[in-house]
Image (cartoon, rainbow, N blue to C red; front, side, top):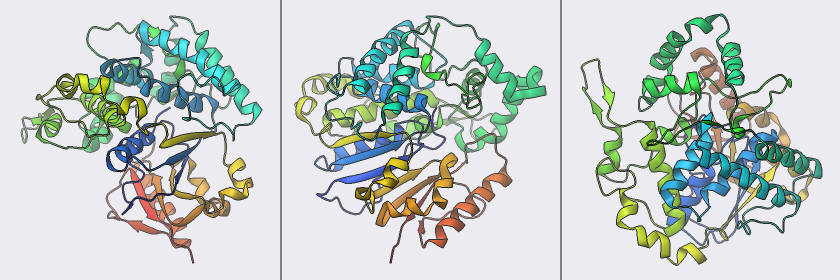
Length: 434
């Protein structure tokens, strides 16, 4: 339900913008965070550039989450702070506030209208192009939205307990010790901004992001994903939703750098002053600020992620860019259930200038038809399993070796290759064609 790599600006390594439309293919990204970061940075650096994102998600529930999260992100009926917090609640929490639950139900009804009849674009004109969705795919999406709309206000913890028992197996009774072990061996060395208490809370209860005095009592229906075998639900209970936007950000000034301040360095009891929650809040606020104003977001008070909004509040509300910015004219999202419709259409030959492949979709890299879609000099991003806690170090190294071997065989050139003992969360390649 979420990626296991940091949100990536998919246009970051392009040396100069182009007046032509940029087409980006994402295969199983599982969340829209890289899309949002790419849009935000593009609007800051070159707001005239048009981008089309083709998002391939084989699971209807995951594709449906893209619709909802993008709708929440661009919903200007809510203040920025409320929008950011609601986005993160829906994105990462097993239980949400009653207000967020009602929002999901309301937008589920609107999204059903959108999928059934594109005339009902619910304020998202020109944002979605549904031309590659078959009627069966639309029906599947409608079924998901309908299940959200009819979800009860409270559900038992039986579903999560079943997931945890399946994940821990005979270690279930000692799961707290397992959580601590996983944190200290796999999370802290690479993402210590995620606090132990926060990671433990998410592992055991499903709560990742909580804000203020809000009561989180309503089941989040968007995380009810049927498993492929049809038995129970299939949701990540290993790594968590922190990696996409909660472990790093653009450190544009000293106040942002302070979000990663560590106390008691060198004592063996090091502790971050802030947590993954503040980093996630900053990232989402920055993305919304960029698409609203076309400018980079800056904190103005130490430790106050939203301080830049207070100083510039009127600017966010009345900036003319809010109404006629190319933010919706400059990009379009095309949801797809599989690569087959793209493979079959001649128009997509040598069509994409950038592609992203998630770690669980790397079998795509072995398909010759995939490379027919890419232009010469296409930037290819391949997610690794660095943050997959279900994989050991040997598997991760073997995974890297296999990806590099496949791509070197078709003359792809790796950018900024890491050494053999270091695993990055995303590998970057440039495609070279004769």
